[in-house]
Image (tube, rainbow, N blue to C red; front, side, top):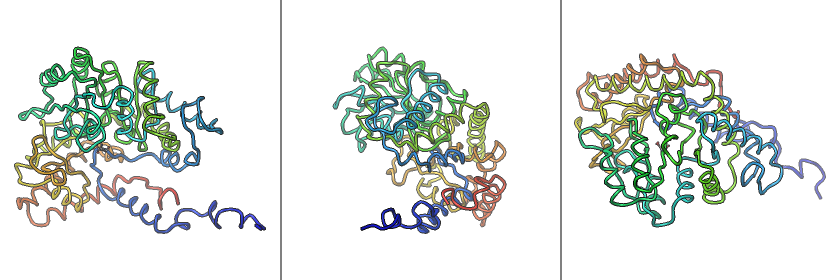
Length: 438
Ligand code: DSN
């Protein structure tokens, strides 16, 4: 028979040891990642650097709580504070984006999109979306994704000359295929999308319009990008790119009937219980985005993206569509006879982290690609401005020139030293001697 708490409860230290003491192996991996983030310039478009407050929310006791359903309509007890938290996140999302309804439960942008599909479509229905190869997203009907397997996906592309959406082609395809849903937005399309035109095309075709604003939600929140909500039936977003929060998704709409269907689409449709610690982090980032300083951040992201694109172009690096209106840009390496795979690895060795990415009409497989995608949201958070991004453009060009044998020996090593100096001058989490959970 158990004789003491020590016999009844979990192992010694369970409630008292920090991560470093309790699990040195996991701690070492997190510690390594903290150092990597501190010492490298993050140019992956889907990343950012969250506040210490967001980290606190993510690592909070909210992870212990199971709830299903929605505030006031739960299937489990003890939901008082969970309800307060989720209601707060919903109210902040509605206020930030000026919309009537928000669902803050999607675990990611893909789950948000799946819930929309479940609410609006039946298996085999036709959707019209941007091709993955042109800058679209896997969850927009790409063949290997559940959306491509269960729906009939028709895809539009971009022009070979300008890399821009051909709205006449979208209109023609909508007329020809009569989709039930049209999707605007993607993961590697750098330009402003004409939401009004998409709205008109969808209306004429009798389709619903989903705008997936994952890659520019922060700019919309900051008021420096056109707002898709007036033109779309539904807008999905992620919280972890330029909204600068923990990982997760959002569904926004102004239509009450649709909102109820999206809620059912999320739960019980595609998800079970809520990741309440992620919802807590969403509430934090939405609260941060409601502060006036966030507008300054959003403007800085836009300015920095243009500075980086300009610096690359000045060094004869081919930027698809000639520039950007968003936090991201796509570089075409074909004229340099380089692959995205090789170039991203060389850049990483110099401390510049980005991802290989297909460019429109790419003839390389997705594991190789002929392009690179850069985003400025994370490095803007660390305080870089246009001068630093102009310098980063030069460093990227130095590395690419070096790969082609067009740079002086040692240029890549010099780039790496300059990256380290920039990171030292703009530290992230400077007060964290160790990982935050320690
Ligand atoms: N959709 C992926 C990306 O754009 O990188 C992850 O967010």
